[in-house]
Length: 96
Length: 337
Image 1 (cartoon, each protein chain N blue to C red):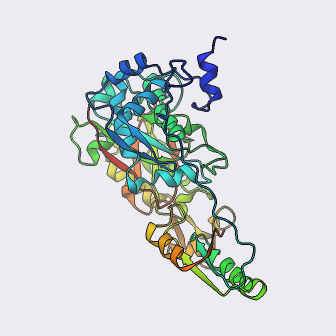
Image 2 (image 1 turned 90 degrees about the horizontal axis):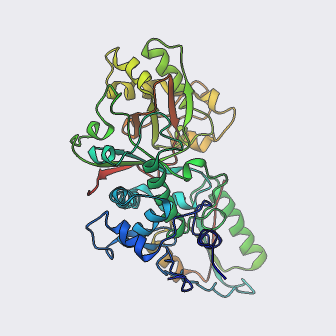
Image 3 (image 1 turned 120 degrees about the horizontal axis):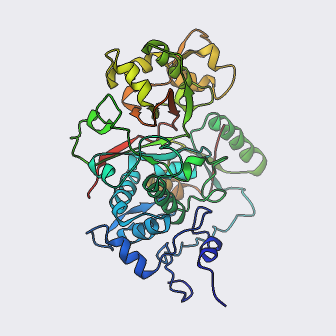
């Protein structure tokens, strides 16, 4: 019921959960960074270039590049969990 | 201060921009009279937000959209089938593209409730078509969060996202229904859903035999910039009864026409690489040498995914609806009335 007006909330009151953003690191030195390739064309080329820059310019210890199954589908839980265990910072990005 | 119920709902962003029938307990009870199912039964979760579509929330949206209770079984059946994994509604809710789930409803119940497949069936003026499709859209917005500029990255969206529901013009069709062509009984109530762009009208008041007619329709199916050229995706082609009869009178069945269109809806690579979404990677993914200008690029990679229906009024037009990408596969199934 909305505001006691007698109208029904069509979302059935299902308040969408707000998830706080993870704290952003101020420094990438020594960290393991994950890059999630969305499979769009040239994402792999962009990521290889970004990985080199992350290592040479920001002192990143290691870059882990993983690839989703398809750009129009979410990454699987298994892939996300695997990345969450392995990396300290992750970025999802697309090619095109 | 008296609250204007129509303004209240528009301000809450619980509509598609048009006024909705305000859901009150009494009206929702009336709408639930259209089904024997338990209001608390969960029909599915609408991506990407994932809120539950229960029989009750589906009824609320059917009411808001302007449905009669008799339409509720089609809305319930429609949302259930749209939420099937292989249809990938979540992908379309978020995509830059503007396709919508087009519902083609076959069977006696569609006829009973007045779903329209004749003159103007893609357009305004037919309550069942307008409100059943609208109910689906309102759920995609309110339960799924597929709102442009938020979860949805759609660049243009499209008019077909207001409503996208029709039946075939069985009274004037020379062929069995789409559902019967897929193996269902004529007494089954069946919904087919495919991701579709707005219909592109192909006017041909000249052809007197199928080959010329289908050559032209095939060409309309191969537009550079459409995803059908580069993905194994669905496409809906709606022939007017006149065009369908031109084929049928020459002895062609629906399957024959699909087969012929699959052969005719092609372009030389030189023609599609001049513009649009041609890329060497996409050509290679289709097994085509990007440097071979004479290579043939086909729009219909799988004839099962060309959904040929007979609809519209009398006259010489076929409507071509291009599709989306290979992560969505058209779905069909019976629904409970």
